[in-house]
Image (tube, rainbow, N blue to C red; front, side):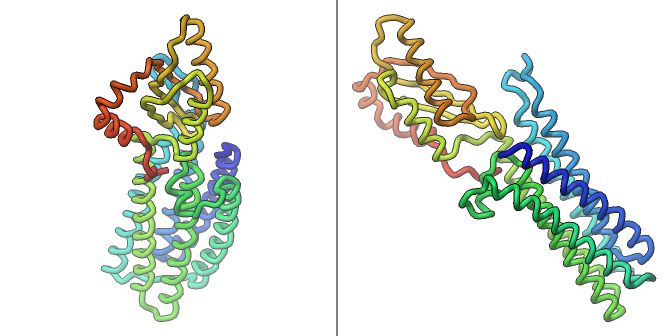
Length: 329
């Protein structure tokens, strides 16, 4: 992912949400609309989330330490997971509570009847610009993937998070506009409460999706099939390696992949020749997949007879090592 592209989308969303939140709070104080309050809190939560993503991106750039020898790249995943919790608790659960409260007390829009509608329409326009920026930046790296696949497979969490947040914000604004408009048309404040409940359900759903996808990244995902094939070809594309005995990959961060493999090598006469061969293979791997920055290769003398004797165990090992479809990110 382009780090600058992700940052640009986050900043655009942050600026939009801060301005929208202030406007919504003013509209709530003047009108008493529960949909406006839910949307204001939603915008505050989104603003905090974007600040968390920016903080996570900055902290992830710290250099490796003895306590964290592989660096802090995965800290971006941690902050993205925190975003899902904030969206669930502050955004979704608060909206559901407010909907229940207003439904029970049959609250409505007390005054300034036109103001919530005007604010919501203006917010939809501003949020659309933020959403368009996120789409534009995502399209630069999405390729021919569907949007669902892009959100599920992206290793950098920022753009998928902003995309889902902006999408949820736009749909939530439509729900709020529906609730407010129906309340003004019928005089029944429960329409406003219903719009608030729809916002709450939407935010909880998005938060759960984000949590599931980010959890997979936190647990550790291996290379995608195309990168794995490129690495395998790079390892065996030369006389230095006869075959890969087994290999594992792991993302240490969105732009850093670890490769660990046990490889069968010819019977080199000297350790110098072996070391030179290993270095050549590592260079080929980095040329094929530049994000493969941490590489551990364990040389071994491949024994075909032993492989045939343990063919069943080898098949199990290979099936475990082969990466499947990543579920998160």
